[in-house]
Image 1: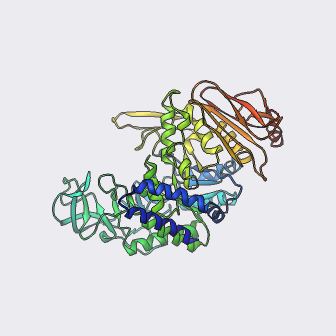
Image 2: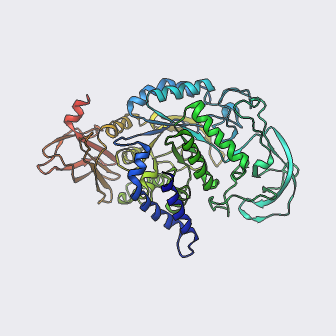
Length: 548
């Protein structure tokens, strides 16, 4: 199996060496060809078969810092399993710089999951380690896989300062040094005294990092300080020349002790916590070579396929293709371009060309590697990448990611449960935010995904506002389905479902009148304006206990 991943990596490296080729475009083309060639082998490796999994991001940035999140998971897990959720992306469970208030991305100690008195607290924002382990176990007992949010880019809130030599660089151009090497002092010493070597004996020092952004000997000098004799990592995003450095103490991912420790942590999470996979944070700042090695190592250790998804937030499909190719196709990636299309469509007041809603997306170009989403904790209101998909459009967006053949869909916690919070915006003013719960429509879409979204897919993306598709069913799931949506006025469209003279009902309940297919298995399907309708066989709904 490793040979087919190496084949892709070799092809992408060859393209990178060719000055006549655009590396990103070449990577996307090579990935398409590679996926087409090896789809059956890759699906066999994952053991998917005729199965429609659905992930949920089970947190958001403003999840209450009351220490009860893991307990809420214990209470809610049975309902999630019943609804059709098969995987949960849980927040970073480790201790962070903000102690009991840290979302988890200000990483201090990866091995403290709410077990030790560090950073002013034993519990994390979400609860204690015991509660976390209990929630993980219950979910897995219910058939829900657990994906651990993983922050390898940096460490923060060191235990003590150290002196070392470093070179200052311009934060906006990492190729522009601002002076010669000099002795600086920065917070780079980590011994985790509250943990006292339990789970891991490694101490971290300045030589385990390649750059920091603070020198307490000259605090007014704003620079990125790169350790002398070290380099910024390659195979990262090219923003600011080289986007290796993001924040805190940037890990030297090429240091053998660092690589060994991150592999040890992965083993520990598999054995000690029982996770089924990992969501990798901020990978645009980390050398892609590392992840190819790390994933291969852990899958060999576990002797099974692990679900891995990386967060490389860019709307450029060629950049995503380049990184996916450099990691040898071993990880899935979040479909940020698809989110952006949803965002733009939701703001266009019916003036978005829905025929192009999938253009430039992983869902269209690299579907087997696509984790599709509508919103997340970074795009929600008042956050760093704020680009909200407006509430009215969310049923349409979720219809696309949940009912089509391509991609592994991810539901955002506030879209299911709703959310209410306050925070300051970029202008310094405080805002009160209310996010709508779409649980009623999402439960219906999940029902359709679980029972009807199978088999061949016929697309009808032939109208500016009104688009649709049909699914013809499979051997194990023989019932067909028609999906129609419009971001403008009410729409209708003739589409084939392969079931002649069959009565269909709109599962969403938006349209109450049934539609009957003709003798050739076609019908003129309908949807209201700014809405989605999901037409499924009435007899199949009755067998499921759904009535109208």
